[in-house]
Length: 298
Image (cartoon, rainbow, N blue to C red; front, side):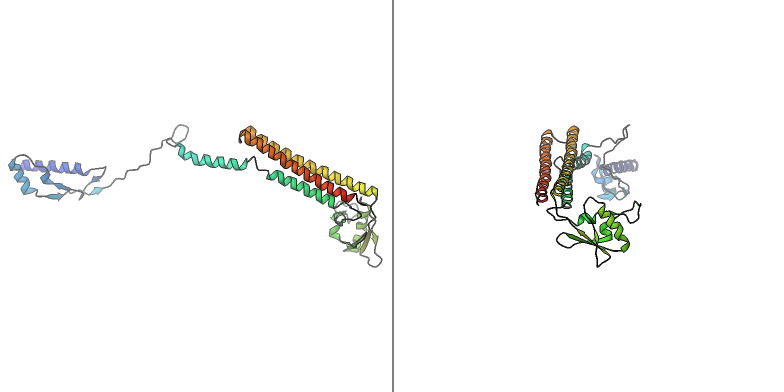
C-alpha cells in the first residue's frame, strides 16, 4: 500500500504545482517553476518519512513556458450606421478645433484688405487719367504714345503709336516723333489728326522720318474741357469705391446671417468698414481738387 499512497501523493503535488504556476494569465510547460515537495506533508509520520526520503528540497517541473500577451486596446464594434462604437469626444476635438480655426481665419469680419486694395486701384487709375490731361499749357507725351495706329487702311488691327515711333519732348510747345519706317509716317499722322487732342503733326524739313507736333497754348475752352474730363475720371473712381464698399458690406451681412460672428463684433466691423470707405472717398476728392487747381491755371 505504501507505493500506491506515495504515487498518489506525488500526483496530487504535481497537479497543485501546475495550478500554482499558471499565475497572472501565464501558462508554463517546462522548466518554469520549482515545486517544493516538502510543502505538502501528510499528518502521519510514516508518510512524512517517505516524503523526506523521496522529495528532499525542491525540483523543477517538466514544463516549458508559453507566454500569451494580453492587449489593452478596447474593443470597438461597428454600429448599424457604420460608425465605430467607443469613439470618444477626445478623438473628435482636434478636428473640430482645426475646422473652427480655419473658418475664423477665412471669415474674419475685421479683414478689410480687399476693400483697401480696390480703393487703392481706383485712386491710382484716377491719378493716371488726370496725368494725361493738359495742365497749364504742359502736354503729357504719354497721351500720344497710347494712340492706336492702323497701318493698313480698313484693317481692324492696330498698334500703339509708342511701338512705331519715339516721342521726344523738345521743350516749349513742341513734341518730336522719330518714326522707325517711312511707310508709317502717313498712318501715324492720320491717327494723331483724327484724335480729340486737337494736334496737327508736321513733317520735319531735315529728317524724313521725323514729325514735329506743335502744342497750342491752352484756352479757356481747353482748360474747361480738361477740368470736365478730370471730373468724369473722379466720378468713375468714386463709383469704384462705392462698389467696393457694397461688396464688403454684403460680406459682413452674410457673416451675421450665418451667425459666424457675434453681434457686437459685427457692429464694430461695419463701423470700421464705413470709415475705410469714407477715407477712400476723401482721397479721391482730394486728388481731383488738387488737379483742378493745376488745370485751371492759365
